[in-house]
Length: 196
Length: 122
Image: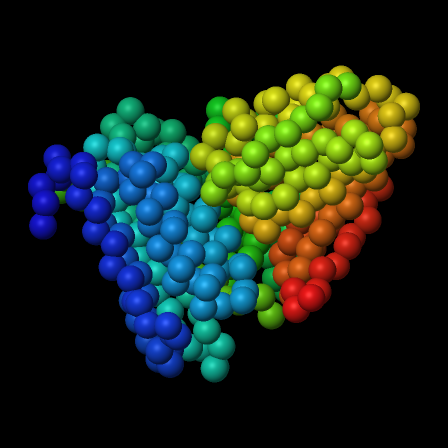
């Protein structure tokens, strides 16, 4: 294991089998990443995950979620501290389900901003409850509102990524700040199924 | 109106304006970390299109990230002024999410959308 200051160390563990093993009903690890979230490391991760997800599955929904999660790390993680991302799979009533989970350190000067994003995200969730559609939260309407809003970050997203993930996820992504001994971290988890 | 050709990369689409058939084609994947920077020259190019210019925009993207989705909306809104514009939105027959993405733009902008289904087996 490298020290936290070794930014060259990249740890990606991938299930290299040419077909997915029969997914069990409990979560199985398919790929994991533990490294500094530099652009080069995250590009390598995305390339490996594409190999795992796309080349063995025709469905694109899961890889779209992977792209957003990896790019969230690229945009928001503290580049000087290691970040983790895990891709897991399981079978639910015979259908494959996937979970993408990431943990990344937050820069000290961005903690308030991240807390504000989480509060906004909570507000969005509450808003959608008031626009229930067929008993389900209408994330698509909310997505359209966010897409058409004038707000945007310098890099373009305006928080649209979380809503975009929520739109296609099994349930709303779980996002929270963990106050770890080595500083605050953002925990993110989303569960995705293939296109019905 | 000047020519436009942006070569594809692993993270950015190929963008070509074909003057002979008045067609702007975006193809490949659009997942740049900084989509605003990438799309700036395309938006600048679109600024110079005369209102009476007949233009077809073909969108043949397999993946695009959310920051690109905002930039695509900016492009469609900029082109909204054109009196004779059509967006042809390509999607694989089994890619419901890409179809929905096109429908979302169709809902937001005042531009005619034509949805073109691609047979992934073809």
